[in-house]
Image (cartoon, rainbow, N blue to C red; front, side, top):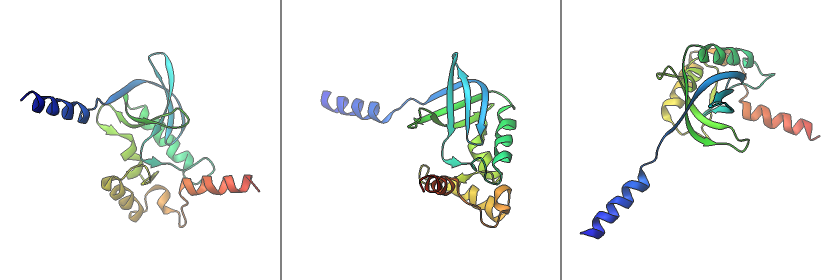
Length: 160
């Protein structure tokens, strides 16, 4: 009996994880998918999970950045921390006023690609497809280049 209870306890504790949320004041928006917020007196860079907005110099970069600024100004910002990247940025899902998902809003507005390499969500893939077929935002461009391809090309140009 004791061993069954122990196994059940170990199973439950290994499958239960606590979700960490950060909240604070947004102090800077770098681009459509990256911003800085003040969390308990410390600046914390936030990178939106599962999406990739146009890079500076790409069409719709400024539009995506302004959209993010406008959305973040709507109310209280809370970040569900999923990971930390190699640059020390928190990777997360951004909620405004507890209900508005910024990651999804950028996809729906056609101002971001769904970064399927890092997020397998079929719902987010569907949001991107709807924006694309509706020609919203960056999808009005005939040959829109994904930011990861843009960055790859820029690195190749610099290494020549």
